[in-house]
Length: 304
Image 1: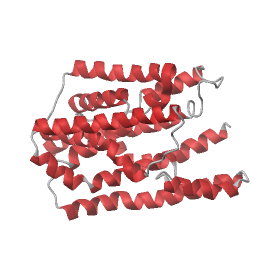
Image 2 (image 1 turned 90 degrees about the vertical axis):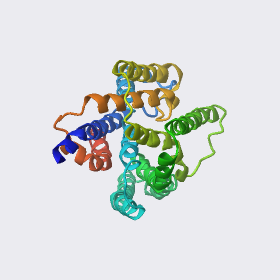
Image 3 (image 1 turned 90 degrees about the horizontal axis):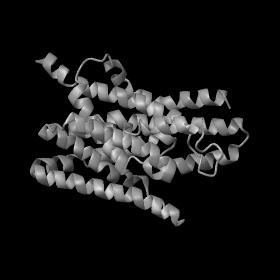
């Protein structure tokens, strides 16, 4: 029985492992694209295109992490006390430790550049925005999804399948509208309005509940259509980020990324439920996520 249960979860290990590999690739590729706008001579260069393609092909990483959490957590039978105890142990300690660690890392880097005066402001701003370092925003966002998980469990168990599907569609529609509005506000120079990081989780309820929905109702889709949707999402990201704006197409809440992420989740679940020797990588995926920027920045600084 344990063997059967284990075999059913191989796809989840593979998904976590592939997602953390994608996260690392995404952040490495970002070094070639970030801060390069259409007026920069590097825009459209070979290096820029390489970065753009890698980013476009890996943006599904965070959505899949959120979906896999929803898949298991929203369909679990456990007491609220047990649930929160596990989540606090898994998230809060790493959040505090690594936030302090990266804050000290930022201060050290500024000190080495004789710019210590701005270091404390940079660190304070990072904490206020809920991202002491660029990748830690996820650790500041996910606890709020965990906080509402007991309520979401009740909702998922109380409503019909159709009602839950409509709720998920509504959550995605609002999140996508938020992604579009950010770009519109930026266009009209109204982007100074900053929302608290405590609101960020609202945009990811759709992904979270979709994972739970797929797990609860054992949803499958045609693999051919899923492949077409994945390729459409990725190609749209590649092309749209060049011809229109990467500010929208790189968003985890853009239509193209939602499409690609959802399609890939189904493809991995339906076709990668086999031992790809990635279970060890999956086990350490959270640790890799936390520490990988340290290696990326250390290596790239050698070439500057």
